[in-house]
Image 1: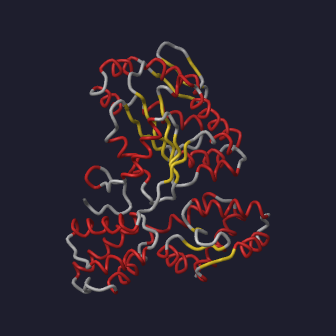
Image 2: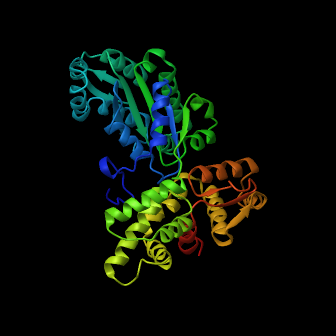
Image 3: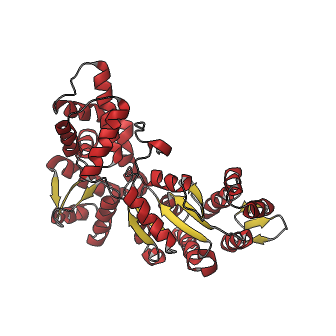
Length: 388
């Protein structure tokens, strides 16, 4: 298992998330459409590729990243292209010769703002075109369409077009999920680095996605993280005593693969340079200091706020995160006072805090009225590079 820091991992490099995978497959088997819920860097995309690379018998899987789509036409273009591209067609050959031939024979000539034009000259709107495509496939296996960064697409449409168009896409997908004939043949899985619930709640459209089965992708447990780090040590040929590994886990605290991989990378560099011993806990502290020098690994946490929020919302969120990075915790009553300073009412402030919680910045797990960073490492980086 290679130590792939910040990348999607596949094949032998994937750390098997057995519980999550079993939960997802149970939901698929039950006929649910799924929303994978987790902040960035937790491993949702790697899990999606695991499902694509190793589907259960009776399923055919398509993975589509729609992050760059900033209008409904571009989104549907990506969907239809994925169902026509050679990779998908080739994957069908081993599943069903009949299905493969059907896909080849369905000709989409053009996807435009007016809809989808088929080879027979018929032009249909996106929703009708998708329904026609699925119906004409005569699928003898169930199709799983995994849409990564769907929430980002909705946010892009809100930003570059308007709320009406964003709702149009949300409603189209709900209509597909509610269509029994479509649901018998297709399961949708949505995921992304920002929360779909947070995005749609801001436009009062949460009811449009309330039919989705939300499945949380959690950080590793302490025992899972210990095994994960131990395996990374073997693959990178570094030696850490058991107590040093536990010190690493205590320092990381929020046990998502990214932070564990990042520290193992820095420990490997330390061992290669022969400047520090890895035999004691101090090596972990040095590795954290070295990791914090990688601006590219952390800057997205800051830029995401600028891209996603209005000026007032951004300044509010930044001030809250600045204070927590300095003081370690912050009470909810103090947060409401800051909201007024930035011309936000109490409900707007609460929505903003829910977004920061979902997106992985902060939590109030220990006390509902007190917020703190999920990751002590992110807190240190934020305090050094943003707050000061």
